[in-house]
Length: 110
Image (cartoon, rainbow, N blue to C red):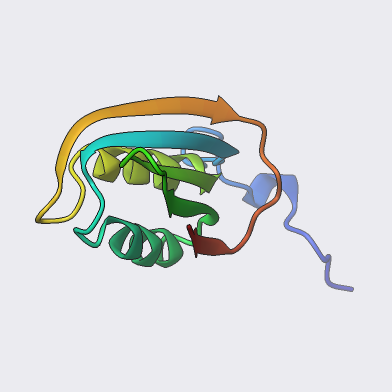
């Protein structure tokens, strides 16, 4: 009978296995970030990475986004927010850790 799981001797060592945790952060981006395709580009890149969350314009001219997913993918989107799309000028990015909510879809709102 075949085992439904690998035997311990066939498992890779902990050095070669990287376990990724899920995290969520909210970012608020200030600068020239509205009217430059920030939200749409952010959504495309987030969906390509399989992240959940949202992006929206704020009334004061800033953009707010939340990214939820694997650490490296969330970190990559935070790094992208520090630069933004071609015509954006990012002056400041606030990064606020949040509890994961189980978001699997990425939405553009507001």
